[in-house]
Length: 465
Image (tube, rainbow, N blue to C red; front, side, top):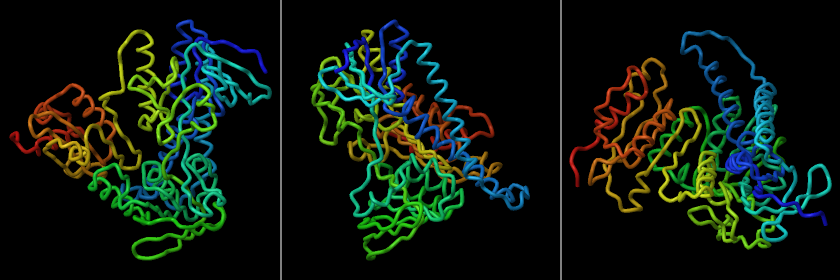
């Protein structure tokens, strides 16, 4: 067995939170190492967040060109070069890897490329990608191994070699007919992108609505918008079998209330949820417990059941967004320095990067009802915001929840262009505990999308319960 190497801080997995914590601790002079199986910098800059947004933007450009006549531009026929779309994404990823390696160099944190497994408390055996192994330990250990696409137990699905978001973002040809299993954030983002690239797209969802955590009016409006682009939706549909191979021809058998149906496509994309990467990494050898879903059990300080071991991001059951992983790392960082931060009551913004975007922060109507919190609900069509008369981007709506007992803003949801900017404004308003009249009566620049906030809160019913 290799000789044991000791580090003051040892991070398993180089996701967003883990690498930021590693660089921080190394800069403080602590001997720090990160063990990463494959992706330098984690999934976000390599295969998830940035690559998907890169291709979504290319798809938006294709959509605008295809509809340029509406804006008085006659472009004539155009041809999509999917290989160049992919290369644009790859160039971005390559540049990101270079910057990550530079951050490791300048911070002093050591990057160990290999597959790590706990063999004793705080001790990890690393099967190096370059051959051989290393045995490393940490005075403090941080686990940031993330999640992976879950593959539903449908007969024939695994042998069909389905796409996940990883492979779907690395195609050099446009699928003739893309079947998408799952009507959540990932499935809908990629469904729209490939529809805009030219694919026929069918989305299969087991539940009775898309995006099951969202309010019904949000789900219905997003489904209407995407249907208008030519995406077909089959809801409350149970996959019961699969034949063929993705990339050639696949046949998906479904059962629904209307009976059995067969869908024939060229490719199938699985976007039906995530599973934690916590199996087969020896957690039981280190006294680290999992919850009943397979995520690492942590308290509100992200401490695991093993002393001196923390978990970060998705593997700890945190909301599956990079910005949450970053906040996890900041909580741990500050607590290591004597702070007292926790994950309790933090305000997490949700974003889906379809076009138009879907954003949400604070309570939804469904959550308020579940918690027994009385609210006043205000809505505003995006088309009521004057800026959209100039841009033509008038799809969607804004919704705000205001407390029924006082004037606190409890939640904000928007489907619409430039929704990310309005999301940030509303997040700051909720964090600052602004009463809704402060926004209703504010002066917003004209003509901007932000004017919609004043109009929205002007629709709040006056008076308390």
